[in-house]
Each structure stands twice: as structure tokens, then as C-alpha cells.
Image (cartoon, rainbow, N blue to C red; front, side, top):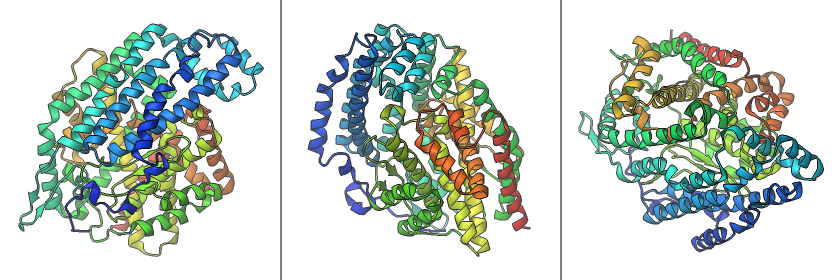
Amino acid sequence: MKTEYKETLTRSEVPLEHTWNLKDLFNTEEEWEKELEAVQNDFDLVTKYKGRLTESGETLLECLEAKDALEERVMRVAAFSSLRLSEDGTNSTNQSNAARVDSMLSSYSASTSFFNSEILELTNETVEKYIQEVEGLDKFRKPLMDLLETKPYKLSSEAEEVLAAFGEIHSAPFMIYERSKTSDMTFPSFRTDDGTEYPLTFNSFPTYEGSANTELRRKAYDRFVETMNQYKNTYAATYATEVKKQVVEARLRNYDSATDMLLHDQQVTKEMYNNQLDTIQKELAPHMRRYAKLKQRMLGLEKMYYSDLKAPLDPDFDPETTYEESTKLILDSLKVMGPEYMEIMEEGVNNRWVDLADNVGKRSGAFCSSPYGVHPYILLTWDDSMRNAFTLAHELGHAGHFSLAGRYQKLANTRPSRYFIEAPSTMNEMLLSQHIIAQSHDDRMRRWVILQSLGTYYHNFVTHILEGELQRRVYDLADKGIPITANILSEQKMGLLSNFWGDAVEIDEGAGLTWMRQPHYYMGLYPYTYSAGLTASTAAAQMIKEEGQPAVDRWLTALKAGGTLKPLELMKLAGVDMTTPEPIQKAVAYVGSLVEDLEKSYK
């Protein structure tokens, strides 16, 4: 385990090669400024169709094409601002530009709100007739039919326009949360018993969390929780506002609940949603408790605390790798996906699609942003650990998916349901794991990869599923009119953690504050979908291992389909049937087999 904990650089001190190249979006800040102004002046390229969408199929197609073209420009302007803010949230210019873009997006949403309202005046039969008669309209079939399905929940055109005008306000909870986390929240350093002082930031905490040094790990946790606790009431109020927003809108639209509204947007039934949450929590808990007890035994801990869960099981073996070494390994592992996919991967790692710096104000975690018509951008904080290679492979999976979808589909058809979104990313992790195990003759490396695979399942089947469980409880409480406070959130979080871990892990009050750490709560019912994606990729990766090219072809076909199919159909295209609990049960059983392999190796 590395023991160097360096002072965090400012953005201006970061080497250029460690940053992404935003010139592929806009060559200069001035160019971005001009386009921000120009795109707002060009709203009329779409608004000129207001009141005319029901005229004919030809007019409908013209407007759809115009809206796609304008939206591509809007997305590019917004992406540039968002990426700048993500790379340094302390920069006042970045903050100001992000606010300007939020205002632009709100105006754009309000200006184009007529679009959905007018299309909803058409009948399904009329739209189908237009599609048959007008060449080119068939490419918009899926978004049009999806829109018509929302007809029972739409407000009047005037009400929709007013609601859209509040777009900037509606996004405020997430903005406040992120701004506070990157710009205001500071953590004091801490000392270990040997007198060594360690700096602490939101982004550096995961490194301490995964430390083999129990004293270091637990003291970092205590100091981190101490600071988070000071913000809990503010963050609870911010999150409660986000939840209340969804509850009020759901009632206005006559949904049975906020959960129903959010699942409708994902094209996911409540049965699918509850099945994912219930099956994994019930069937995975025994495996993860065994894993926690194994870790406690091997680390020689008297008690297994929540702060110990991410401690390395083999503390003397923590493989390091440079960015260059890891990209070669990742590319080798993905060759099975064929030349078209590999071309995208190679361009991504060689042409500065990735921002890997660690600097003050940088957004925590990792993500992939995919502005249509350009190329994806990946953010992560690189620290020369092999774990980072898996994070990079994950985000490259998103990049490959949206590059292919953008290549083969119109903008309106690129994004599938969130239920599928995490499948391509976790597929890359699976292939990387299989590749390392197949080529390695080192038992410790093979065991480390099993541990890393367990880390992937932990992240998606434990962390995100338990986030999803908290969301399920919170929205249920909010729908009943119960105020969402810091105490409620912490009590619920501690309760569900205790239910899952049983007597295998000591759940302290700091564990109850983990609802403050993730931005996913501000993204609708996003967390549980990670497990759906991993369930699909687990099944598909096994098919690729067994069948080879036919399974690869099915997978690539699903990626290229973008958002042209509903999630269940998309997964079936990849060869995975999610209408039954079977794929989930098989994925959980696979996790159990990994734990069993570890138990045998440590006997």
C-alpha cells in the first residue's frame, strides 16, 4: 500500500497531459462565449414551429430535425461549462459560467415546452399515419411513441411552459450540494500516533478508506465524519427540497406517487424496481456477511467497523500501475470487442479524453460525459493504483457505448433508459478481470482480481442498492407527508445498513451519514439501476466467454441501438431476459462463488 499523501495541487499546477482537451468542444473561451449567445438567439429555429406541429407530418419532421440540430449545440455549450466546473469548482469564472448556462437551459426548456404539448394533441393513429407517409419520420418513432405514452400525465401547455421556466430552480438542490462539497467543505488534517500529519479532502478520503493501516483508516474516517456531521442539517434540507420537488410534480401530473413518475421516465415497472431491490438485498446479504467476517479474521480485527469494510484483504499486495501501463492492459482486454470498438477505446486513451489530475476543487468520483457530435469526456482522479485501471475501464465502457450510439442514431435516439446505462461500463470491468486472470500466473494477482471483482459488485450490489433502498424509503415517507430531516435520513440509513450486515459489522452513527456522500440522490431513482446494468453485463460477459463472436455481435448491436428500444427489449437484444428474477439470482450466486473462492484460498 502506498504511504505517500501529497498536498493537492491547484488546477494551474496540473501538467497539461493529465487534463482533458476541451478544445475539441470549443477552441477558446471566446468561441464558447459567442456560441452561448448565438444559441440563445437561435431558439427561434424551433420556436417558429409553435402552434404548427399538428399541421402535417412534413411540418412535424421539420421541427424534429430542427430541434435535434439546436439541441446538439445546446448540449455542447452546456458540456463545456459543466466540464470546466467539474475540473475546478472553486474557480469563480467556472461558477459564473455554470450559472449562465443553467439560465440558458431553463430558457431553452421553457421556449420549447410547446413541443411536447402540441405533439400530445395528436392521436397515436395520426402519428402512425404520418410515419408511414413521410420519409425520415420513422427515425423518430421511439421518442414520439414514448411521448404519447405520457399523455395521461401531461399538464396544459401553459402549465408545462411555466413549469419548464422554473428549470434552473428545479436543478438548484443538486447545484447547491455540489457547490458546497467542492467549494465550501474543508477537512482538517489529522495525526497518527507516530506523529505523522495527513491532509484530508473529500477526494482523498477514499484512499484512506482503502488503507491497510487500521489506525490511519479509522482516524481518517472519524475526522471525515466529524466534518460531514457539521453539514448534515443543511444537506438534509437540500435533499428534502429535491424530494419534495418530485413529490409535488408527481401529484400535479396525477401519478400515484413520485416513485411511479420516476420509474415511468425509465420505462421500468414497479415490479422490476422492487424485484431488483428485494432480491439482491435478501440473497446477497448472507454472502457479504461471510465476506466481512473473512476480512475481519484475516485482518486480525477485534471488531469489524463500518470504516473497515473497504480495507484491503491482502494488505501486503496492492498492485500499482501507471496510466500508460493500465491503458495498454485495458486495450488488450477489450480486443474481443472488435476493431470498431477498439478504435474508439484507443482514441479515448491517447487523445486526452480523460482528465486524471488531482487538484483542489475537482469534482469527486468519476464520470463520463458524452456530448453528441463531439466525443465523450472522462473524469477521474488517478493515483497509480490498479483499482484506477478498473475505474477507467468502467468509464471507457460508457464512452464506447455513447460513441457507437451517436454514430448510428440521431440525437433523439442515443440515450437508453437508465436501467441499461451501467451495463456497458460494467461489461468492460468484467472483460478486464477475465483478461488479467487468464494471463496471470501469480496466485496473489489472481486473488487480487477476485477481490477487485468483489469490489465492483460491492459498489453496485451493496453501495448503490442500499442507496436505492434509502430512496425507496424516503420517497415513501415523503409521499405520506412526513418531513425529511437529517435525523430521519440517518436513522433510515443506519436501519437498512443494520438489516443488511446483521452482526457481521458494527454500524456507527458515521455510517448513517453516508447519504451525504453521493450525488446520485439528486438524479432521480438512479442508484438501483447500477445493479440492473451489472446484472445484464454479468450474464452477457459469461455468454461472450462461452460463445465468443455471436455474443459479442449481440452486445455491440445493443450498444449501437442507443435509445431505440425499451430497456427490457434492449437487454433481450443482448441476450439477457430481465423479465424474471433468474439473471439477478445468477449474478448474486456468482458473487457467492467469488466469496467461496476467497474463503478457500485463505484456509
